Length: 188
Image 1 (tube, rainbow, N blue to C red):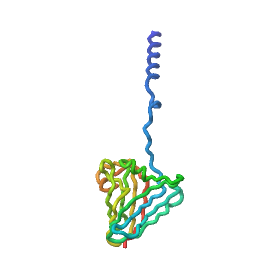
Image 2: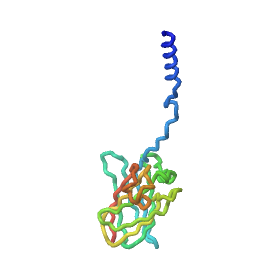
Image 3: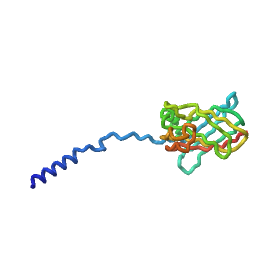
Image 4: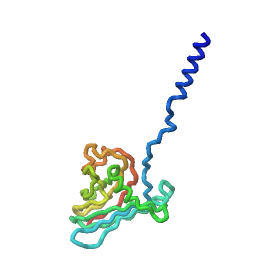
């Protein structure tokens, strides 16, 4: 009987130590949110004219200081070609996060939401390999004179196949927000 107990304990110990450990496995890479301190949006009126640059700088992130945001005055009933540059200015020199967003285009998308009655529509002009929108480049069309806000949001690890997302509806996108800025806009 002692021999059976000894063999059982020996076999059990061998089984426990022979099982592979997850500690030896290579962990899944962590794809963290990007650090974005600065978001610059350049709007160039089609047909020529002065570029409008919307800026947001938040060098302390979640710190006590509010971001410095500069909106813009846009012409009524005008179409603009838009482009976005996202920077991490905590690095020296500043890191261009736009490049990373473009490289990981299947995991990112910018969303454009007119808020508070401002008459703006946007159209995506750049896409990932699956034909889903990205939004680093876009067109923006203004309506009649109005005031309000243009909210620009960058989502990471979102569901690009969810209802409405390919049309720019953030409602079902999911994912994490890398940056969200409310730019004050006047259309005149």
